[in-house]
Length: 73
Ligand SMILES: [Zn+2]
Image 1 (cartoon, rainbow, N blue to C red):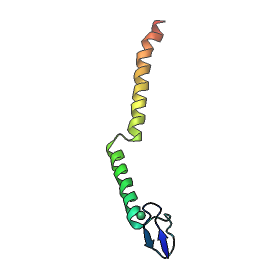
Image 2 (tube, rainbow, N blue to C red; image 1 turned 45 degrees about the vertical axis):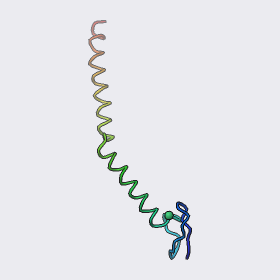
Image 3 (tube, rainbow, N blue to C red; image 1 turned 90 degrees about the vertical axis):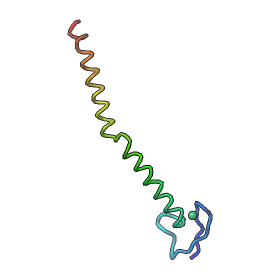
């Protein structure tokens, strides 16, 4: 059957509407590549675990700084 791509409006032939929707293979591959690029950027950037550890370190540092004040009072 002839399907019109929702993304680029080009017609493409497929046995049935793909599970990904009316998206031609070219647009689908582009989406996959885009996802891969974003994944790579996230991999090189700080991970969620590193961000959590940073928050914990800040909290500990804040606690240590606050402690002498509490003892002084
Ligand atoms: Zn397309």
